[in-house]
Length: 278
Picture 1 (cartoon, one colour):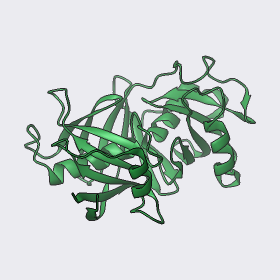
Picture 2: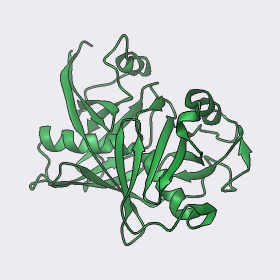
Picture 3: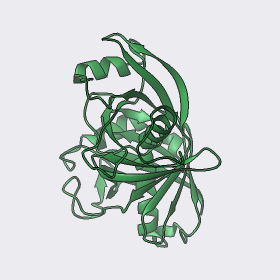
Picture 4: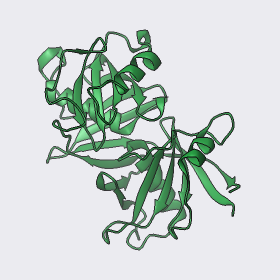
């Protein structure tokens, strides 16, 4: 059976999207690794199977896998791509205006809105600052030589501030922090450089992927830590207005609603489509 797919990207973070609403497609971890391989497969940071949700209020379930074949709880760029794929390719049972969708994930149901400028806004929920996925102290001094701040956006993140992100050996340091014993389920890592009060550069090492061009939950993690530390450590007064985080693959826009939930806004773009021989 051949499997039809479409490839999407959000700020350079790329995904293979597959309609699996009938539940007939099963992929082994080794198959996911092969398909995501950039030399011998299609090439992607992950695979998203769009499936039926067990929750009646949700339009679909985002079954997301990293490029190494492991399951992931949440993906901020991937969920925007899922929304665009679903709204453009699949007729939902409650999205008659084609501008709003509820997507179920392993981190809960997320609401996504299509904006007039063709960006997508995701209510990513509240940050979590205490988790069994990272140390109980919020900054435990140096781990692998870096002062880290911890937060979960459904998945664990370690955020550190540096003078210049281009001076960081992200592959070496990111891998060491990801696999450090302090993180029983490994962790994502963000290196952040302040440009001004509303602009920051970020490089990210994603758990199960390596360095990627952007990371949606990583962007939210950075924003959460900026809010938590501000105005301490000279980070400035935040954050009533939308701020910009510049990744290698493009810009993501962060704000919060009246309840304090983080809103992630950014692009979702179709790249190409094809079939996988299976």
